[in-house]
Each structure stands twice: as C-alpha cells, then as structure tokens.
Amino acid sequence: MLRHCFLFCIFLFSLSLSAQTPKDSTRVAQDSTKSDVLLKQIGNGFFPTSFWNFDLRYLVKFNQYEGFRTGLGGVTNDGFSEKYRIDSYVVYGFKDHRFKYKIGGGARLNEDTKTWFNFSYTDDLLESGSSKFLTDSRFFSFFEPRLLNIDLFHKHITSAVSLEHQITPNLTTETQLAISNIRPTYSYNYVLDDKSYDDFETTTATVSLQWSPFNQYETKDDKLVETKNGFPKFSLQYTKSFREVLDADFNFSKLDFRTIHKITHKNKSYTTGVLTAGLAHGDTPLTHLYHAYPNNINKATILSRFSVAGINSFETMFFNEFFSDRFTTLVAKHYFKPFAISEKFNPQLVLISRFAIGNINNIGRHQNVSFGTLKHGYTETGLEINKLLLGFGLSLTYRYGGYHLPKFNDNIALKFTFNITL
Image (cartoon, rainbow, N blue to C red; front, top):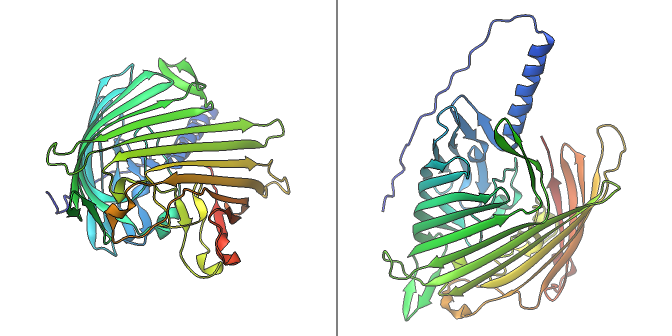
C-alpha cells in the first residue's frame, strides 16, 4: 500500500484591482450582493476563487494524537467545470510527523437528478467508534471542541467509489464501495477464530438515504432552490463488510438511523431533538463500534476538565468510557427567546437533557483496551447560557442515574460554549 505523501497540486490564484470609478446605486447593490455571497461561502467553510473553493476545515486543527494539524484542500467550482470536479487535500500533523491526504474527484452523470460518480483515495485518520452518514450535508464550524481531546484514532488507507443520486428533491441517496487497510494507533488486538489482529483489511458496501419530507422548493432561474428547511428529517444507512472479498478479514453489518426534529414556538423560542440508533452485527472490531460522542477529559477536578462543550456530545461522559455494538441516544434542547438586554448583547438560555443506552456482545474479543457498556442507561442534564461575549458562553451539566459516580464533583462538567453565525 502506498505510504508516502503525494504532493497533488500547488494552488495559485491572483487578485486584480479594478480602476476606481464613482459608484452608482446599481454598483453598490452588486457589491453588496457579492459580499453577501462571499460571507455565506465563508460561513459554509469555503473561501472561493475563480476555479477553486479553498476548504477552511483543513487550515488548522488540534487533537491529542497529531497535535496541530494544518494543510490545504478544497474542491473545484463551476468556474473549473460544471460536469467534473476535483476534491482533494493534504495536511501535516506536527506531533505524529506524518502527512495525510486525499485525492478525489467526480463526474456528473445527470444534471436533473444531481447524479454524480465519485472516486477517492484517502490516507488519513478516523476517530475509533465514530459513525457518519454518507448523505450528511456538509458541516462546518470555526471551532470543533471535541477534536481537542480525542486520542483514540486509527489510520486508514481507503480506496472508494460512490454514486450520488437524488430520487426526488426530498429524498437523496449515496451508494459506496470501499476497500480499507486499517491500523489502530493505540494498543489493540481483535481476537477471532484463535487469531489476533492488530491491523486488518475491510471491503464494504454502503447504502445511505436521507429523507426531508417537509422541505419546500421553488424553481428560480431554471434551478430548484430550497425555500424552507422543514422538520423532521430522517437518515438511514446500511453497511456490509465482506470477509475474504479482496482479502478482507471480517464479516459484519451495520444499520444506522437518525431523525432530527425542531419545533418553533410563538414566543421565538424553539425545541430540538436528535434521536440516533445503531446496530452492528457480526465480527465487528472496536474501530467500527459505536460510542455516544463523549466530550469529557479524564482528569481529577472540575476546573482541570474545563474545556469547550460540543453540540450533541455527552459533556460528562469520559472519552473511551463506553463502546457498544447496539445503542440509542436522545438529545433534547429547549432554546428560550434571547434576552434583549441591549442591541449587541442578547444572551440565550438553553435547557438540555441527554440519554444513551446500549450493550455489546463478545466483549472479550477486544484485547488491550478496557471500556464499559451502557446497559443501565446513561443520563445527564444541564443548561447553557450562550453568546455572553464574542460568541462564547457557559455550560453546566450534571451526570445522574445508572452511571452516577461516587465522587459528586466527577458528575459535573463546567465548560465554555461557542456559537457564532455569519
């Protein structure tokens, strides 16, 4: 397998200054529109140029394994081609002293159904126990708090082809075939049939669907434009790993489900709920199991655990504390109407409740690691006061129920929040 970094491209772009002319009302309106478009692009995590949109996610990140991680990447835009695209990146970790990269692209097969054939070759890291839907729309945050404290990663070299297809505007699908070489960065062995694996190969087929039945659309300039982001939304994904197909080591399957709902109240407050469930069946290594998105550092005091709260993560659950091959989580939040203290100071109170339950079969197959199950049901509740200063706020969460800890202070998580909207 290829292990050396491939320097796939050097991005060059130039900026030209136009001659200054008196601005009329039309020119001012055009400049304002361009500024709004640019601001929206940056809010989505891209800095656009004439043919290439730089992806801001790759500029700077930090985690416990790589330390600082920095690089360049992005995707071509319509200035390059409306029928073809290149989607690639290269980054470097200053703690593990290693380049990671992706070489990818796609070709549009049908414009009306937004059908794209994609291919990629990736040499990078993934958080063990994490799970993602292929059809998830792009998520970008200027600051991703969970990344700071994650230390359980596995290396993967993956070759993949996929097909995106829009059955209707409200129903999108993506199908992927992938071959991966996986090597955990931590001490781990998976025991199966009297053989111990510290690295392994997988050959997987994945089908993912996203249904947004209450979204509304209109045709503008011969293009279908979303006019209402409706709720609830539903995601369903099935993954099958085939043993002995292209030298794959394990035979397992995974079924993932998620629904997101939002209820807007008359007084400008609103309530959100996210229900997630997953089921892994067969010979499933730790890398492909589920955690419940923990976000707490295993340190002695409340202040030493002080960090930044996530969005749907469990703030009192310690990293690597639980893994499951079947689990369900429910995260409910109620956002009160912002307090109109002044024109620029409008803090907002949020009440939060989270619940997780799960279990695992054949826990003895996972060697050199120790973790618990969620069979008794994990509960935490708390509140946030957001947007106190420059997008920052405070979060206080309490852990109770079946996994309440003996020391009272260990059940409390006090953290910053960070919310900013462009």
